[in-house]
Structure formats: structure tokens, C-alpha cells
Image 1 (cartoon, rainbow, N blue to C red):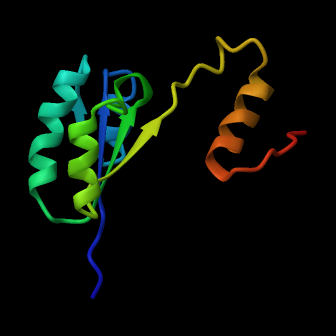
Image 2 (cartoon, rainbow, N blue to C red; image 1 turned 90 degrees about the vertical axis):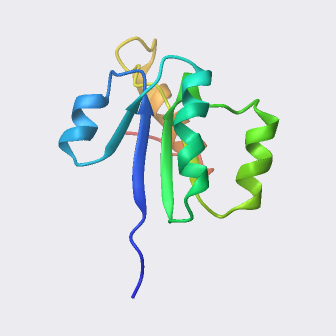
Length: 110
């Protein structure tokens, strides 16, 4: 029997309602300090989990946190890119770059 992977989202609040409607565990944070305090209990658990963190809240420069994450298989942290299609100068290029970053290949959109 396989365990389910728990999904959690850390956001400033823009995406909160949509993820809650989907049944995802949502946490609000306004800065990286708050993200650290939210992650602390998740690091203590050994259950399979995936934590998606809004891009500008992602603690990529936190060496201490990175070391702790390397010691355990869970939680897995991923960064959610900002949804700025409307603000992008070229929305097609923006989406192409997101796809390239995710899969490692350039895909021409039609």
C-alpha cells in the first residue's frame, strides 16, 4: 500500500481561495521569516509531502534550511512562478520560458 503525498501551498494570499477550493492545505506568509516558521513543523514530520511556495517567498538563499532539506527526503519544496501573464510584454514568450524551465526544452507555441 502506498502513502499519499500531502500537498501544501505557501502564498501571500492571491491564490489562497483557489487552492482551498481544491482541498489543498494553504498557509499565508508575507515574508521569508513567516515561511520558515510554517516550514518548521513540516520538517519535523516524516510523511511524504510537497510544499509549493510562491516565487518571491521561496527561501533559496537559506543555507541552514537547505542543509536540513538535504538530510531528509521530505518535504520537497518547489517554487510557484508568479502568474503575471497579463503584465508580461509578450505572454507567449513568458509561457514558453515557463515550459522550458520546467521540462528543459524550448517548445514553440502555436
